[in-house]
Length: 292
Image (cartoon, rainbow, N blue to C red; front, top):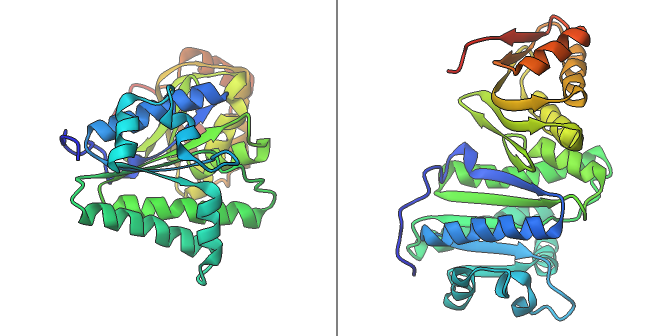
């Protein structure tokens, strides 16, 4: 084992399940490599699920080559990092008599329990873009149930999960729905969001380039809220919001039932002006000077 640097501060917390969004393969690899390296440095046992070439050899995967870190390559040799290719994972889940999703949850649970039994102080799991169509509501719901398995494990164990989304290999529906499923914690290009103490906290810049992805996350956050519960959005750390993202907020508020609101805390000045131009509905509330 490596020297233990102590458990990650948010290991096992609701914010330990994050979606990393990248617009190209290089950016995705850089982000994943940095995340894996940090988890290894903290002494975590890391399980990596990704796509291999036709020969199925992990040493041909980028993480085992120059693009991976030295610590990662050493961890592959020592067993601190385990790699499982997606076709093998899918075959194991499909062979399970309990069904694919239940089989996946069982594999995840077995990995976690085995690592903790071996004495690892924390566990980290990451997987590359699954390349799923998400063509209908049933498949979206199944995907949400599968991701919910991570949430259940995070709630009971010192576990951190990184889901990787490469927009160049996924269709628009998958990207939109994946942001909705992962709306509690997303790290995207130029902006991120995390659910913190019941408040949806945004950071960075929201421009036309990320508008559809922001819309997916917003739809997911609203979908999770129970009837009558307001969605509180903290914008104190947002520097810029363009008209496309402002329209998403307005349209979402107009579509909500009269009994609940979208409450914007400390929005930037430009967004306030845009909301006035777009005729902000009464269900879209602006609150100033509240950074709690």
